[in-house]
Every structure is written in C-alpha cells, then in structure tokens.
Image (cartoon, rainbow, N blue to C red; front, side):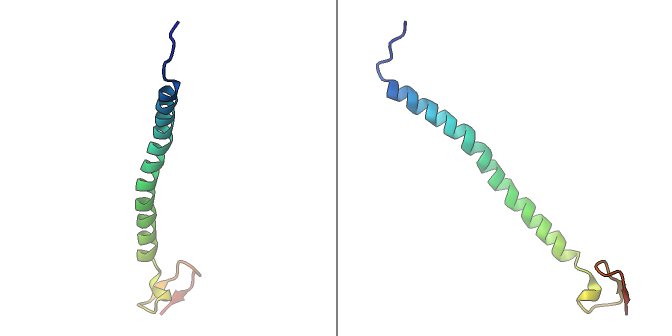
Length: 68
C-alpha cells in the first residue's frame, strides 16, 4: 500500500489539471469568438442597403420597395 507523505501536493496537482481542462477551452473560445463576431459585424456593415443611405436607385432589402 502506498502511503502519501504529502497529500497536499497531490491535491494541488489535481487542481492544476482540472483548471487546465476548464481554462484552455475557454481561452480558445475567447480567442476565436471575437474574430467571428468582428467578421459578422463587418459583413452587416458592408451589406447595408444603398437606398436607405440615399445612394443610387435600388430595390430595398428591408422594405422591398424600389427607390430612385
């Protein structure tokens, strides 16, 4: 039978492993998520209908009316 001289060291090891298992995926999510949100916002800004900004004539994507 193994007698642990320092059980606190084993507990620290288990806590470090548990923290790594939890924090590494969270870190990856928080690194990737802002990139995806930024791309989505950029696409939304670029796809703004021209007729609502007072530009050339177009068929509005929002209201469906054709403006000149």
